[in-house]
Image 1 (cartoon, rainbow, N blue to C red):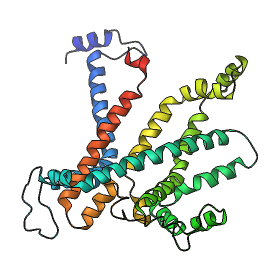
Image 2: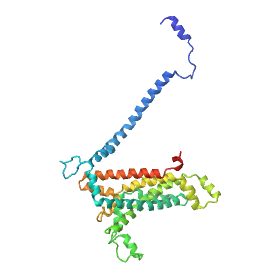
Image 3: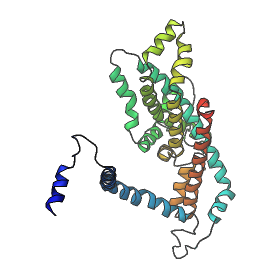
Image 4: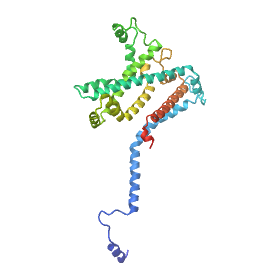
Length: 325
C-alpha cells in the first residue's frame, strides 16, 4: 500500500463510540448467532427427541400398522395385510357395544361425582383454619397410590363374605344378607365406579383449589359491597373467573378415566360376563389372548373417539366473545 493511500485511510473520520455497525456486518452476525443458537438448542433437545421418538412414536406407529394385519401370536407365520378386517370383526361383535356402553357409563358416572365432591372440598380447603395443611395432605394422599392397588383394596372391601362394606350396611340395618357386589353385573359396575370416584376426587380438589387461589380478593370485596351472597358470588364471580381451568380439568379427567383400566382390573378383571369391561380393559384382554391385530384396532378406535370428543368439547366450551371476533 502506498503512503498516500495510508494517509487517506488514516484521515477518514472514524465511527463515533457507540455507533451501530454497518448493516451488512450486523445481519451477518445476527445470522451466525441465530444458527449457533439453534444448534445449541437442538443439541440440548436431541436426547429428549430421540427418547420420545424411540419409546413413544415408534411403538405408536408400529402398533398402529398391526391393526391392518392378521397379527396373532398363535400364528406368527401369517401376518398378511388384511385392511379393515379387524375393524369389521370388532364392529360385528355384540360385546363391543356392551363394552362401549359400559365405557360411557364408567366415564359419566365417575366424572360427575368427582367434580362436585372435588369442588366442594376445594372450596372448603380455600378457607383458612387450624391444621389446614394436615387436611390437605390427607385428602391429596390417595392420588399417590397406584390405581391397581386401589382396585385390590376395594375388592376386599366389597367382598361378599368378609368385606367391610357389607358389614357396615348390615350393622346399619340397610341389608339383611350379604350382597354379592362383584358377582352381580349391576352391583359390580356400581362398585368399580364408587372406587374410581373415591380415587379421582383428589385430582379435582387439587386443580380447583389451585384455580381458586388465583382469584383476586378484590373481586370478592366488590361482590360483597354489591350485596352479593355466597351462592351469587360463587356462580357469578368465582366460577366465571376459573371457567377455563374447570373446562380443561374436566377434559383431562375424561381422557384419563377413559384410558384408566387399573381399578377395574384390580377389582373384577372385566367380569362378570364382560359387564364391567371398558374399551381399554377389553383391549388388554384381547392382547392377552394373543390377538394383537384386533387389540391395535381397538386402540385406534379409542384414539379416534377421544380426538372427536376433545374437538367437540373444546368447540362447545370456547369463549363466545373470542369466537365472534
